[in-house]
Length: 252
Image (cartoon, rainbow, N blue to C red; front, top):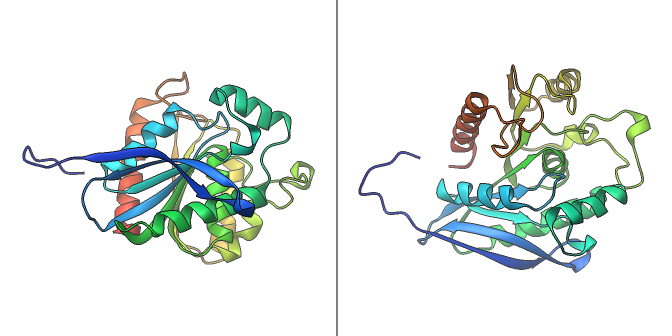
């Protein structure tokens, strides 16, 4: 966003409910610029630590940059409590089922494009497990203009990692991907490791998909999280610049 001192700025934010997988009501945090639009939109998928404060902040960050942003609670069915407690329940049960996530994301996409301020151009963003879910959803749902994968682990999976809840590695759906991919990774990460990022890149090339990857030295898993020891200021600032430039090309 380019600022001038006479720039009007306003934002609306609230928690909403929408129909997700199997018609279940899913809570989502929504933020959007004030005004009639039309505005592009983005579905914001939270990480394994849960539907937490960082994700509320990022949802508002996207709205600040001109997007209608919706962040669904993918752990809704595990009950309510602190994000940490709910996430612990989900981890103990083997994670949320991929089909359920896809259904909840499909509902979030339908909700956001139905808003009168929406331009209909919608991206999807996630970090950590949320990035895995974003890539999976972009492969299995038509309608996204861009997908942003920030250090998504287990997009590439070997056979021993497959489970009842996660029966197919997201990378194996790459042939069905219908939008460009932005990948942001730390070279010190092990989930995904640099080798796994290479495998994902190979799949994108093999299937003729549009993508751009940015890999950062001296950065590990979660290096955008300013409230954690993993934070890397210079790499995070540059990564966000890459995100805004990518979204400008794909959703404006």
